[in-house]
Image (tube, rainbow, N blue to C red; front, side, top):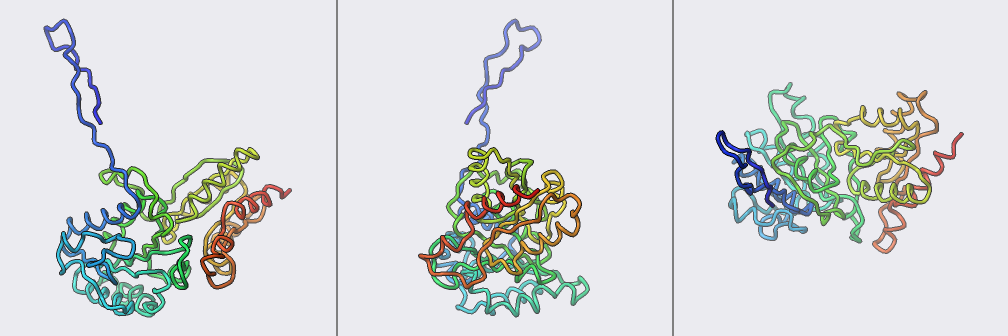
Amino acid sequence: MTQIIERPAAHGEDEPRRPVLTPVPVAPTLTMVQAINRALHDAMAADERVLVFGEDVATLGGVFRVTEGLAETFGAQRCFDTPLAESAIVGIAIGMAVRGLIPVPEIQFDGFAAPAFDQIVSHLAKYRMRTRGDIAMPVTIRIPSFGGIGAVEHHSESTETYWLHTAGLKVVVPSTPSDAYWLLRQAISSSDPVVYLEPKRRYWAREPVDTEVVGLPIGRAAIRRGGDDVTVVTYGPLVATALSAAEIAAAQHGWRIEVIDLRSLNPLDFDTVADSVRRTGRAVVMHEGPRTLGFGAELAARLQEELFYDLEAPVLRATGFDTPYPPARLEKLWLPGVDRLLDCVDRTLGQP
């Protein structure tokens, strides 16, 4: 891309100088997979202490090819395959962090995080507190997460509530390629452990990604669509679903839905959510995980506790069901979609 810049006439000249064609940098268009790969590459290039490892991440480049090319570029000492042992993967990451390295382990699928639960909860999350802050834990655990790809059991879990209930962990969930890049760069730079949940069904979403202009930091939400009738709060794979629902609601009913993408679940940008709900008076929280004790329950409780007199109706939830994740053919019936969200919007707007 070029930009035409008119040069003013120099002193003593009657006519302005001829236009000069100046190249203007254009942000590359990347899928979320490519954005995550670029973030890993750039972090490894910037700091030789950054290591990437996990099941099949080196030779294969990961199941989704997220780590493709990293082993070839940085060598087997910095990007390497591990045994199929999630507890060991996180355990060695903790040991590496104690020794001053910056590990970025991958858990191949969300449901496979269960074997690593003890290491994450009992050790990774507590090390800084245990040492009174003397030992940092700059560990970023990447976990391809959530459903929508027709996968088998243990490959489509929503594990965020487990980690959110564990003090000492940051939890982030990108919804766009740009956020995927910058949230990962910021996670790797953090001295605290970060659980980085990647929405698998948005892996192939594509947009320009500016790797020079720093994106929103961890702990900040983004308003993806403005509105003043209802606030919809969501994150990760369901942001696109909420935006589709907002377009349908506007076209068919004239409802103006404000869509907030949390991006960071801990730390939580509650101020952005609260400011929106004070304006709209109504809120719907949407997430893929089961309804009972899901993240929406915490948000609904806090909104009703702190904004009781600003609410025109109860906070509603559009969620998955309180059942194990279903077989692939039933997945679309189980996942919250546009219809389930719009039903909640209709109900909250119908309140007196």
